[in-house]
Image (cartoon, rainbow, N blue to C red; front, side, top):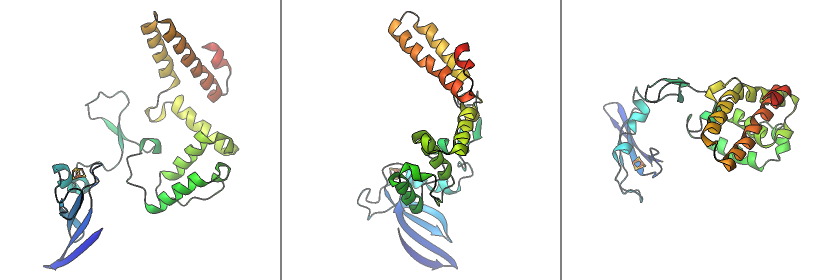
Length: 225
Ligand code: SF4
């Protein structure tokens, strides 16, 4: 990013050449700031991609910084709310925040590459000084999902508790066993006449009680279904 500074009437006006992130085109933009606050955005005529031209969305990027209506935290539709009813609730689960919380900084990007290059057995013992608050939990879930055998007893208990909260209690609006069985029954009634699909459905249905009994630590769940 390049910058030009000008002092006018005790206010410092600054122009920065950077890139628009309002869509994947990444047009070159020139941002004018006054005393550090964005005043307006225009196309950068020297940029090879857009040669000074930007769309209305790019030009209104200032709204992303200052509009009182902008999103300041990730939201999801409340469970049971009608689409369009504008009933939302904040989420803090990193799995639901892939596009929230901003881009990862260079330090985190380096650490994420290092995570991929590290022996999975050593991931838990190593300390990872992430900047982004989502990453420690994301690393734990990555280990739990991909390398469950590397979790120690305490981590295994934590992971099982997390799975129970989601699949049994429906935390964060996740699909529960109850919803799964209801959907299977619904599909059975729709596919009665289709033997191959019913066979497939039986195989999928068998997975539910198996996982449920494992999570509950209770083999009876599998037999009672
Ligand atoms: S100026 Fe418009 S087209 Fe270009 S990156 Fe921004 S949103 Fe996309």
